[in-house]
Every structure is written in structure tokens, then in C-alpha cells.
Image 1: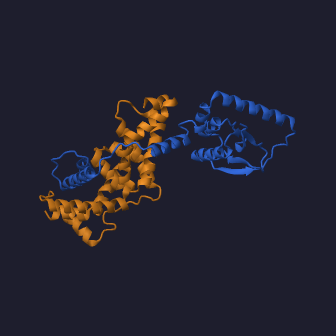
Image 2: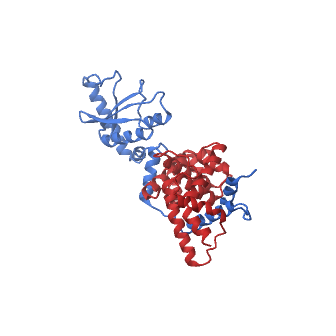
Image 3: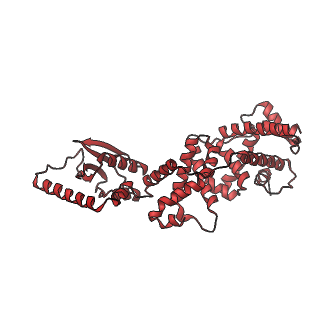
Amino acid sequence: MRDDDDIWFDSLAGGKADEPEKTAKAARAIRAAILTRIAAEESPVSDQNAQRESELINRARAAGLLPAARTARYRRLPAYLAAAAIAGLAVTVTLQMRTESPAPVTRGSYSSIARIHDEHPKELQQQLIRELKSVGVQARGYESFGRPGVDADLPIPLPSAVREILARHGITPPKDNVLQLEIDAATP
Amino acid sequence: MNACREGGRQIEGALRSLDRAYFGLLQRDCLRAVRDPDTARDLVQETFIKVWQRCATFRGDSELLPWIRSICRRAILDRLRQPQREVPLELEAGMTPETQARVAELSMEQVPAADDAVKQRQLAACFERCWDKFMESSPEHALVISWIAEDNLSHEQIAALLGRSPGATREFISQCRKRARLYLADWYALAFLEG
């Protein structure tokens, strides 16, 4: 059996216009007032706003829906620059192999520090922190001998969203889920 | 939505199209709920991201806008629920004796007889004031009432929006009615008693 609440609800939703009860009249009046109010509002304009669209794209990127901007930038590199970058990397690796490199520095952990290279280490550090935070990981930035670093305790088991972020930046997931990463400036 | 399902390079363009097509409409919905343009913008963008994440669940046989709107409305409710806890309201709780008297007098109500322009404007202004107070004090209930009126929502649709069982949804709707009587009491009085 319909009670007063049902009558009120049906009338508010536009049903049974001939409902005689006072409850129905009150609900119909509310409905009419709400619809009048909405009709009086300015019509929404489907405008184009470049800044707003960029915000959305960045947000989609941070949520992992789009590949990082860095990847796109690399994709556009001319062939001669790419060749120069590879040559530079080869020289760096050769030099490092000839020099006795010290053991990796550990900060209160037995895990080793991962290293990656990028043309813009500071920017990449901030981007990584942002991306990790967007999926709930408390990432901290630090600097060691002028090298920007990222330090984060990753959840166990490693969520796919975090795994995707790491993969996108070419970072191997740490075995003990403690991420310690330092970014060297890539040799042009 | 095809670009969404297929992924790949079209995603960025499709997101921009989504923004151009629906931002204005959704922003208006959000502004009605949160009153702050920046928060409304944030909510709309959050909605677009959720649309993208859930595109696999979109059934092509239904219309796109109502589906996007339901996601937006859930985002609005989630945002409203963040800082405050819902407190059940008894009909008489918080009512002044004058308000209670007015509500009691509603039993003598008549169909609104605002037959002249001045009365119409007075009624509209009074509703505006009462509604603002309602939105401020009990936004979740006021919004659900306006969505029922605007889109003729069913109990099932409201239950899905609120994430409640059918029984809890009925209780929520009953609370909506009680709160409407409380916050719209002045407007009721003007609309029904002075006809």
C-alpha cells in the first residue's frame, strides 16, 4: 500500500498529475518551483578552453590514462639527435666501466639505489613524485650530490597502477618494494 | 566512447571532445551543488577521468549523457559527504514553534494560486531563499530532491546513486520529505496559505 512518502515521491517525479492528496499537491509545487529555477539558469555553453583542456590531459596523464608527456617528446626527436644521445650514452658507460665506481650508497636500507638518466632530472623527479602520489604512494624527493632522487615505500603487493608508472619510466620494480631512485643528467 | 575502449593515440583528442561537449552542462550541475566555480571545475574533470576509467561498463544501448551525469552526481555526493556526517532528522527537530504551526496549517493547503506577476516573483524569491538555506544545511537531501524533479528518477536509480539498499533509500527519501517541509516552510506558507 502506498504511504504519504510514496505519494510525495511519485508527484515530485512528475507522476500521477491528478493525485488529489495534499501531499501530492505540495510535491508538485516543489517540482514546479525546482523546474522553474533550473529553466531560469543560464544555458550552458559548450565552449572550447585550451587551458582547461590541458589541465584535463595532465590529470588523465597523472591518473595513468595517457602515456607520460616525456615519452611523446622523445618520440618526436629527430633521428640525428637520437643517434647523438645513444653515442653519448655509450661514451658515459665506457667511462664508468673504466673508473672504479664506489658501491651504491644505501640510506638505512639494504636495497640498492636504482639509477636512470634523463635530460631533465629535476623535472622527471617531480613528475615521478606527482604520479606516485596520484596513485596513493607517499613519495619523497631528495638530492644527493646534485642528483635528484625519489624515495618511496611501495605497497605490497605492488598495485598495477604503480607497476605501470614504473614501467613507463623504465624503472624495474624493487624486490623489497622500497624504491630508491636517483636520476642522472643524460649526456646530450 | 570507441576511442575510450580501443585506447591508443586517439585518447587525448577524445578527452578534449568530451570536455567541449559536456563541460558546460556538467559544470552547471556541479555549481548548483557546490557553489564554487573552482570546485565545480575540479568535479567535472574528476567526472571525465572516471568516465574514461569506466568506459568499458558503458552499455551502448543507453544514452551517453545520463550515464555521464550519473557518474558526475556520484562524484558530487562523494564530495559532499567528505566533511560532514549525515544526521537523521525528526520532523519536529530544529523547528521553531512558528514553523511548526505553519507546517501544521499545511493541512488546510490549497493549490498555489499565484495568478499575478508580483505574487509569482515573491514566490520565486521566497523559494530561492528557502532553497539556498536547504542546500546549505542539508545539501545531499536537497540535491536528490532536485534530481528527482529534474530527471524523474526512480527509487532504483536513487539507490544506485546513493549506494544504499532499497530500504535505506526509502528511509532517505522520507528524510528528504521531512527536511523539505522544514526548510521550505516559509515558501509553503506563502504558496498555500495566502492563496
